[in-house]
View 1 (cartoon, one colour):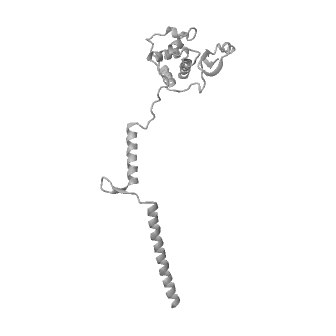
View 2 (cartoon, rainbow, N blue to C red; view 1 turned 90 degrees about the vertical axis):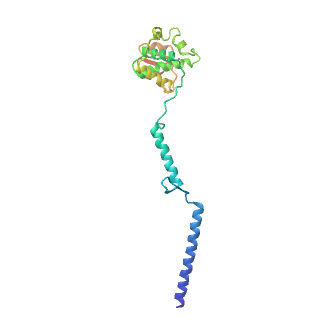
View 3 (cartoon, helix red, strand yellow; view 1 turned 45 degrees about the horizontal axis):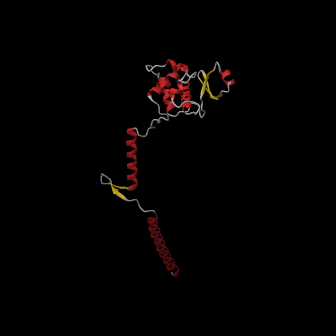
Length: 200
């Protein structure tokens, strides 16, 4: 009898202690991890701040997607050129080597590389009309209309696409006369279309 009463009292005390620890744990959890604030939705339903934030973010994303602002923006030109200079570059690219868009790009890039070199004039027009350089430019007129391929080549170069992959070509030579050019100290960088590109 005494043993039963003891066991009963022990069970009661254990239950009370467990209850006290449970209450203390819940209180501590609320201090450390407070419940999210709840607000009323337009329909009068209670929603948490977290859910409201997610809904706002989703709305912003949907708006951006609909307006096209998530798409890549077009590259900004890294070269500032006049319309005349652009037309001249297209012309010389077309007449020097129109094998492909890339071959046109190589010609254009070579001209622009010269404008940035201390060895050459600093404008497109002066580089093109320098003696014994780009012979085809002598036939250029303002009436020239660039081809779609020449315009693509120009756009890709002036927007920063590096056709020479880090190299700085300042000269190009027909593959038919390459041995003569190499004998004169042409350091080869790349090959496009009918020409080799390099520097001395």
